[in-house]
Image (cartoon, rainbow, N blue to C red):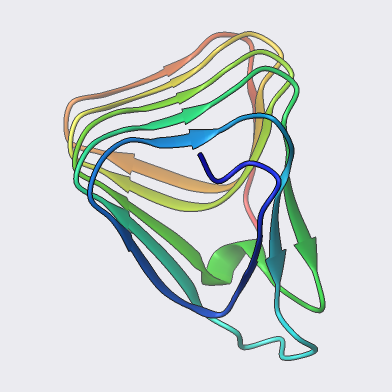
Length: 118
C-alpha cells in the first residue's frame, strides 16, 4: 500500500500489487519542474474510492510514468495523475478522474470518468 506516502523523483519497482488506499499519494518534485517519477509493478494497481494523486513542488503529471504488468482500476471519486502504460486493462469507475494519458494493450473502460491531458 502506497497510500499516505510522499514520493520524490526516482524509479520505484514493486514486485506485486500496488494499492493506493488509506490516504492520498503525493509526488514531490522538490522544486524541479523536470523531476521524473517511474512506478513499475509486476502486477496490478488499485486506487481506492476518493483517494487522490497529488502533485506538489512543481511535479507534473506528464513526468509520472506508471508501468503496470497487470490491470489498473481507479474507483469512484478517485483522482489519478500521470501516464499509464498498462499491459492489460484500465478501468475508471463512475466519478473517477485522470490528469494524464492512458495506454493499454487490451481495453480502456471509462464509466462517466473525466480524462484531462496535461
